[in-house]
Length: 354
Image 1: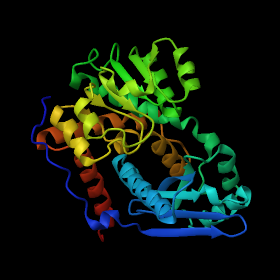
Image 2 (image 1 turned 90 degrees about the horizontal axis):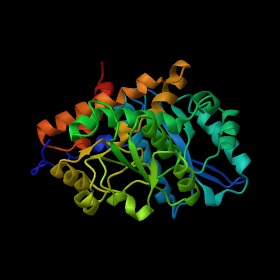
Image 3 (image 1 turned 120 degrees about the vertical axis):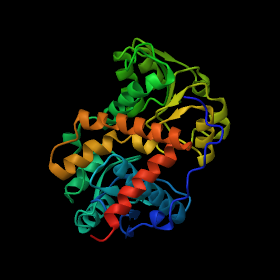
Image 4 (image 1 turned 90 degrees about the vertical axis):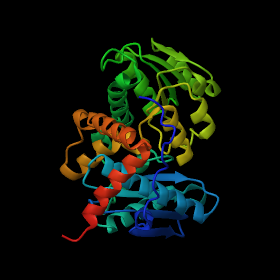
């Protein structure tokens, strides 16, 4: 597929799309709890989203993070065709005085929301934290029943790589044999993805700022390790950002040597302009909120029907990504614009009076 020299910018979302349905500040003086819970949308069903515990420069910064992540979860759930919307909980970690009491208060508040917010773990929250919160609310995910959520994301990534490989002239049919994938970040998602790719016969190059993770990866046959600064320069078929967001700015979009971007990180693009540049060069970009939904598919279905999302339900991400890429090519716009348009349409249809 050739480059799109006149790729159009994504259309701006309507103001209603960015407006959260509910914003709650949860505080407790004795424990030092100061948290925000944002429910962006429940039009399709309960709001799904994790709890994050982190330090923020200000209250506004914490709220901004919670709001942005909650909105992203709405589009992720809509894109995965789940009967649910997006939410997020953010705890300001530097203010905590009694973590145990804070978790109890937070759990009680989540229970008070009467099932409108279904949550699980995220950055800075331990398994022990989640188990304690679960004693206070039925809306906390049962982590013991869900298994490895990092691997759930990896299932979707690898299925998408297999489907996209023929589009970039890599692999053999939809086989990943000898497809070269460069993975940035070896956390739960990155390492699970690397292992699955090796098992599928792919060539894998990885990097991480944590030397111990790199050492562990180097012991797996078929994985090469490079310095963190070098991973974005690797001449690979697929670049898989699985660490922090915002990694692809316009400069990297212009110089990236991979022919596809399929990663597990959230908010991969630093700007819409970076997506336009990838499209202009013909680099196949799988929108992050569409491709990395494996964990929420597994968790949401467990919350809604008492049985976790299956591997087949996660692998259904791949044809959705391909359809998005096809439509973006036909309409000479970015895959991100198409994915957002489809997600917005699904939420708006649910909001309309019947």
